[in-house]
Length: 189
Image (cartoon, rainbow, N blue to C red; front, top):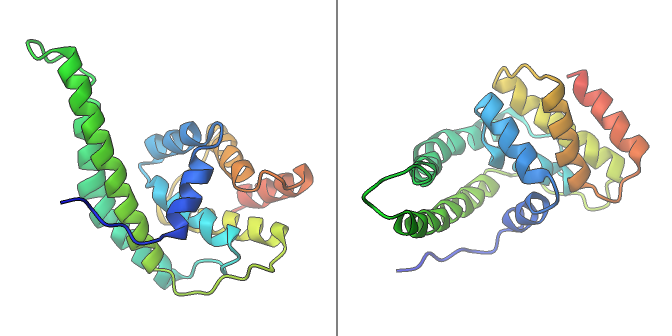
């Protein structure tokens, strides 16, 4: 029986941003260095991009609960199996391992889609589509800062470079000065 996915603007946004040049590599690098959930990064960006207020403690707690339960237990478990299939499992053929790995990738993506639906259901604030893009960017950096602070992540140069890639992809038409200002504010968090 196939999964049925309701409309989810957060999922659509995440696919668009994640598909831009360098974003998947930057997000996965942040994930690997700090053991975080890329979907919470994308949620932080989606909220700011759409003009929601800075995520409050209760909403962040709800999102982290979804992440801890679903992402850690389900999505990461599926991902671990998929990544393990890159190893040699002789006498099982490499072709069969690759076919199975691709099937498991589909399950992983469906699991992430379900996580996006759950994460977006934790949002109770209303967006403000009229909010100035520089303020939206500031909300994105504040949300990212709150998430990374919750994780007690200590950021280095590579992390700031990756955050810059992700923010730039979230607001591809924003002036460079605004991005620089946002990065300076983010570094001060």
